[in-house]
Image (tube, rainbow, N blue to C red; front, side, top):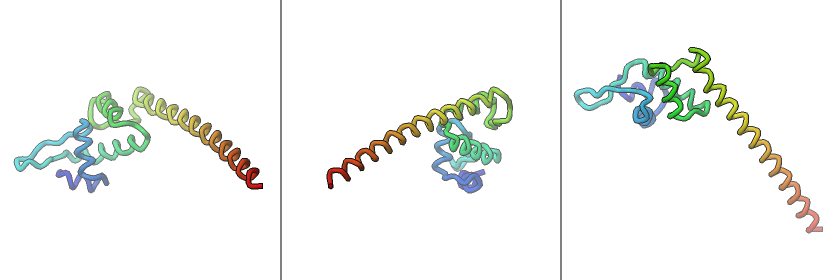
Length: 123
């Protein structure tokens, strides 16, 4: 399957597919004319990669998942070993939410303080 068809079916750009390939996440063969030729299952692999990226995983982490599963068909339902990085990412995001919530609270306090000083100096 050619790059344009994969891109269209997976709803990504050809540029993204070339990037995924450069990262070792998907594989293609070259046809005699130099065009990339991808196996049909690449569409599902790209969809899985997109989903993992939207969950906050890096392409390097995704590559590790693909390598540990022994194929390009990473399946997060395979077991506890595959679930562990997802749980770890969830904890990481929870920590980030806590940090951002605290920063927002402190910034709101500063804005309120600045606002009260501005009002007091105008009187």
